[in-house]
Length: 438
Image (cartoon, rainbow, N blue to C red):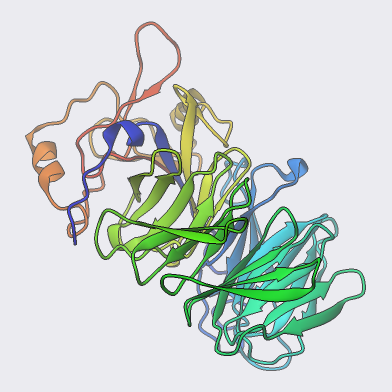
């Protein structure tokens, strides 16, 4: 492993927010005694709602709880902000492992890694329906919607399918023998792009010709996204690189990450066409700037985590579900102005006010103690300078020693304004962090 040199200027412009889902409810069908299954709160994919009426809602695929969750990030009450739909499989005693999801036209659609269904939730009524796909045991692992509202999906066994929402019918293809299709994206021209983690290939469906084309990649690829100009971006998990494919010139350009053995797992394009990569080996989100060709690492607020899926909402907030069971979703948020959380619409003064009137008696504290703020747990301090212990902690390798339960974020009140500003300090990792918890 290489040493990660943090870009403190970049980190000072970003804030981590983590939300935790409620514990498993034993009384529900997926509770601790559910048909003898052992289920927990492991999450996989996330999907921010594109509907302005559901601003702040994030959908979660509960792959370890056999359920779908909706998390309202604008609701500070951890007891009421999460809603859950449990998937009841009547054919067998299994966790159907909902894996990927997409919202379109007031409905949420999801795939099942083990249940072979396309699921549909009517968001207005809350009703859930499931539709059995033609090919059994295809291990659905990707989903997307085209401009007509059709739902596309892929299977790890090399299948690609289309579900007609109006007629409730399926069409399936096997474009290339030996494919292991992991994820897909649909571009501005309704072309379907599919990433294969085997045989080094990128596959494309052209709706005009209704034919499949295959393009050779430098190495095997895992996940995929498309930028605003129609360029296709995909990550080479085993080659520690991200690849850009230009459909017009059919040229592929490979960009290797600066730190060795990073093996990026996920690729995500934000509204500014920055490319974001999940880098669990270095416990970071990594931003690749297309213009400058610069990589910037944003370390996670805590260690030993993995975010198998990343999405970016319309405001540029990067979202990722944490694979292990304690956190549901984490957000990397930029600062619009000092103290204003971009994409959340909450001022730091408001967060501190919540802490100061916490009914459980929590309050803002300096040093390394944490405060409870009506379900919002924040690491904060005021006018605090790092001591010798902090300096020594900063010099340690942050990827082999867990930092203390200390200040992931520092808040300082300047004398000439009523708004708080973010200042990084040399305590563990200096990436700013709020943790929103139950």
